[in-house]
Length: 533
Image: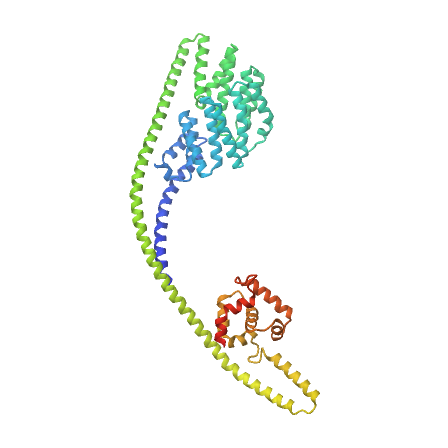
């Protein structure tokens, strides 16, 4: 009854905040589902994946808290597929930032790797690129991502390829080619190694080896661990590279074949492949004197470059708009914070006042209730012991009467030897029956407890960890008996009493090297001793 008063207030606050949190959480859960849906479509339908991501309302950081790294990672993958390099860099930077905050080391490793690739390929900054490559290795090591570490290892070969050191690139790849082939759960790593070997041999003019490794790569076309779109992106680039080789060799027939294969994968081309495709066709039709078709491809190339320029401008506008939105949101949040802070302070003061008032009332009520329970227990205890004592006193009187009779019988004996033997027997009989004489079947503790209520009441409160036999030992020590005497009273050995005293000493925290068990008992139970006297 008394506890319900403060608990009711606490329950009200908990219910209010739980309802508010549940409402906010339900909205967040709905928006997080868009992340999961985008991730499921990212490999085969990036436009649909982008629709899901764009369906998440602003502010993004509030609505998908805890999944921001994945959101920006998916955005970066989509930008890369759409050849929006400015946005690729921006979104993977954001993905890396939030991956560190969320301790998502797989996304941190992947984002670092994409930043390395972007910086090395686009900005041609090897020093900064290597910084991100080392970051990728660190994060993949933290997540124990062996496949990610394999991709990091491949990047040294890629750097040599990009720097036109094709022999070095091949040597690096061949050292781990069988390892890449053994990664059966993701054949991408083997495919990428074959892609670099084909590219290196094509650039070295060794077209036979280029075809050899290109054919190995084509066997992976239906491998289920490689997304179709990812495979096509690598295959179309190789068709363009080999078409370039045949153009330089003036092999028009082979050039025509590879241009057709190159063009059949038009949708899979990135910016570099598209430029290469238009220029190769321009050069091919110029060489065969088909100037109308040549001019058509030239126009297509100009349109493509204009489109790319618009993409760059759109990306810049998008970034600027996001910055403006961020600034406006920051300003709005700042104003909101000032208002909320003042409201929070006022509410906190009221709450503290109420909490203080409730706490004081609760302490008083609790103390009163505690005192009531204590007195009630003492009353019940005394009443029960009083009833027991009345019964046991009658038993004691009868026993004393019997002892007196025996003493008279012994006194009238003339034989001194017989008299001494009878006295010894009487002593033994008295000693043997001392613990049970008042009530058959009751323990030694029950006998002395009835006569020493205050001591046993207090020891039960102070040291509930002591059992009945240990409480009896404490009482006899308190009374002034030695180990040997206590052993005689309890019908046990002196060694057993010493062992129990040791266990009692270990159980009671107040006993130290400078304070003995007897000293401790005499000090703590002095009040009980005075009551008994």
